[in-house]
Amino acid sequence: GLVLVPGLGFDGAGRRLGFGGGFYDRLLAKPPRKTFLLGHAHAFQLVSRLPVEPHDIKVKAVATPQGVIRCRVR
Image: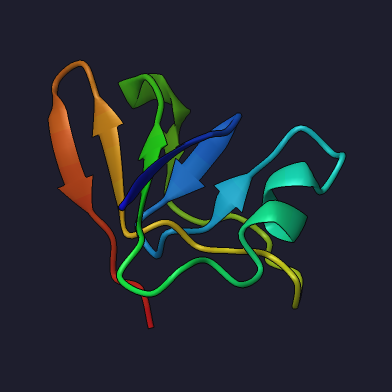
């Protein structure tokens, strides 16, 4: 399956800056197997590094109007 994940910002490691409510982190804490998490943003929302917390869920790629960027998710 595919889940489109919004955010205020994303980095190359798949970290996401959310809107502060933790909704997507709770929703995606245990996604079904083989679920592809795709962030969607504008290119200006891509940054070099974002802070991360233990409960943060990473995306596998980010789609922008310019194309799709694969993340280095570990």
